[in-house]
Image (cartoon, protein in one colour):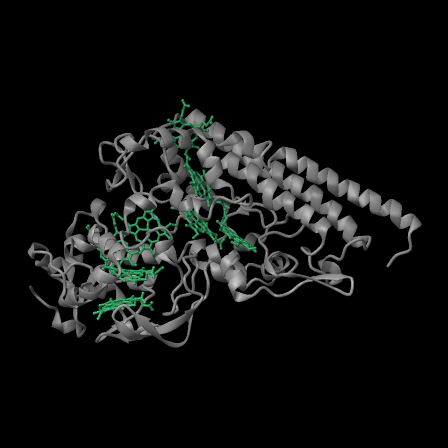
Length: 501
Ligand code: HEC
Ligand code: HEC
Ligand code: HEC
Ligand code: HEC
Ligand code: HEC
Ligand code: HEC
Ligand code: HEC
Ligand code: HEC
């Protein structure tokens, strides 16, 4: 083995390394951890023993040919060339960068292994993930005053005092249980505690915001995100990440009914009845050979090849490089944002929203038409491995129409609400009020947050049927529009006979 001392750092340049021939073994440091944790946490240890981390060294991983390579970093710390990736390799990595590092039976251990730790061996995935909205899901919510207002009106406890209903600021616990469950908490070390364990007294850091696996978690080394949102520990199995249930955890509500749409779609039907015969561990994933209908991963993440081995799509942890449009209405759907930090977007009125209330997009923050075409083509290459061009074109034409129609409906309902605001029957942002704190405003929210979204998600992911019609679809959108109209009409008639407050 040849170490490259000239670089000054204890790093090996992998192409020159012959370590791949060495027998994989467990490091001494990890043997020490296992000595106690095998008894304490048989579940954790069994998960790890069954994982690829327990079987292959980083050097073996790096030496594989590109399409089957899981270790994407070009350089790997020298200490591990002959050892598999054990407890100590992950939980003592970059110890000085983690606020939760603590002296644990002679090693500087940290609990929260972060994406920046994983990047030691999986640099490409970690870098790509920083370009994904998911990595910024915490700050996209918490650093946007409008969304914080929304969260407060929904999560803050309602208080009835002197004939007024107000919503108090939500507690940390309530936020961690609500929005930040999916969007991610901000972790911080608040002290040290002495714990009575099965093996005597030990000291551990106290971590505020823990546990949490939201995709935009702010970690104790300052990094953003949580790889275990999809790669559940300690198996970190690709098989889990490729199943739609993994995404269901967060993409299932009436605001984002993706899993429901998928389950009801033909793709989901075929997955449900045939998945036992598919190979969820093959890398790369061969369309037609390993599976016959797409899961979420196949359309959004996976490295796909045809049975001849030709690449159909590169693996992407950025995931939006296959997305032309943003479906989720804020309050309108729009071209995808250029940058994943949506809290930096400003619309024409200076609000942190990708469109103005009349639908005019904040175009300078959104991708161009050319970029949209490239991303759409990347997605369509996947469809075309199983469908004819006419089928795919027809599908996307209807999907584009769904954007236009739902945005027009949102505009109509917003015009009614603006009338209500300007006549003073509710207090809108123009008069210094919250757009989310009155019952009539919640009817308006249903229109874009539930109904318009549901129709677009159904159109995008081929699950037309109920989620576009009776289950939060056009039926309920029409009902909400009529309710807004009637509410306004009634107030106007009452306004003529009753004195204003
Ligand atoms: C002498 C026994 C012993 C050894 C050796 C040991 N641990 Fe632990 N470890 C414990 C005990 C006991 C706990 C607490 C379990 C509990 O409270 O449920 C613990 C907890 C932990 C935690 C959770 C910390 C927290 O804040 O909750 C991590 C992570 C951990 N150990 C990792 C390691 C790693 C990595 C190694 C090897 C470098 C290691 N341990 C070696 C006994 C040990
Ligand atoms: C590939 C890196 C990796 C390896 C190897 C690894 N861990 Fe972890 N461990 C993690 C991550 C990531 C988390 C959870 C952090 C999160 O939620 O994002 C974690 C969490 C834990 C926890 C807290 C779990 C809980 O539910 O309270 C303990 C304890 C722990 N690990 C011990 C171990 C032990 C013991 C081993 C060896 C058998 C080990 N880890 C191997 C990455 C690793
Ligand atoms: C010290 C290097 C190292 C670190 C740190 C590391 N891994 Fe790995 N990882 C590996 C190796 C080696 C393999 C197996 C490579 C192979 O089989 O070719 C692997 C494989 C994987 C796989 C593929 C599993 C499968 O079933 O195909 C995933 C997913 C993964 N790692 C995620 C993570 C995550 C998430 C973290 C951080 C919590 C992490 N790894 C930290 C080296 C590392
Ligand atoms: C069950 C998981 C989950 C919970 C809980 C959750 N969200 Fe989300 N949120 C999502 C998902 C998934 C998306 C992305 C939707 C998409 O792009 O299709 C999202 C996106 C958003 C966005 C868009 C952010 C942007 O600018 O990119 C806002 C705003 C938002 N959520 C607000 C909230 C608020 C407020 C709460 C709490 C009242 C909340 N969410 C609770 C899963 C969740
Ligand atoms: C722990 C919750 C969680 C899990 C699990 C999860 N997501 Fe997400 N996802 C989110 C949130 C939250 C957002 C929106 C963040 C924002 O808008 O700021 C999001 C956004 C996305 C986006 C838009 C990314 C972009 O940059 O435009 C895609 C695509 C996506 N998720 C796909 C998936 C897939 C596929 C899976 C399963 C393999 C999955 N998600 C699992 C919470 C989750
Ligand atoms: C939103 C879900 C999601 C998150 C979060 C996520 N991944 Fe993945 N990851 C996947 C999916 C799905 C695949 C399978 C891709 C494929 O089929 O080619 C995958 C594949 C991988 C692989 C290749 C596995 C193999 O066997 O070839 C590695 C390595 C990996 N991820 C590392 C990471 C790291 C490191 C992070 C955190 C920075 C991370 N992932 C975060 C969904 C996710
Ligand atoms: C047949 C392929 C396919 C499958 C399967 C699929 N999607 Fe999609 N997905 C799409 C298409 C197409 C779009 C819209 C792309 C565009 O606008 O250019 C999309 C959009 C999205 C978005 C972006 C939403 C937004 O607000 O912009 C998310 C998040 C998402 N899908 C998650 C998932 C999840 C989670 C699953 C599994 C439950 C899934 N998808 C299954 C093709 C698929
Ligand atoms: C791995 C193969 C595969 C891929 C990839 C794939 N599909 Fe499909 N799709 C199928 C199969 C099989 C059916 C069921 C056809 C039937 O019912 O006879 C289907 C059905 C459909 C349907 C009919 C849904 C219904 O309920 O009527 C639509 C629309 C569709 N796909 C669109 C797409 C789009 C768009 C993409 C790419 C974003 C895509 N598919 C990618 C295999 C695939």
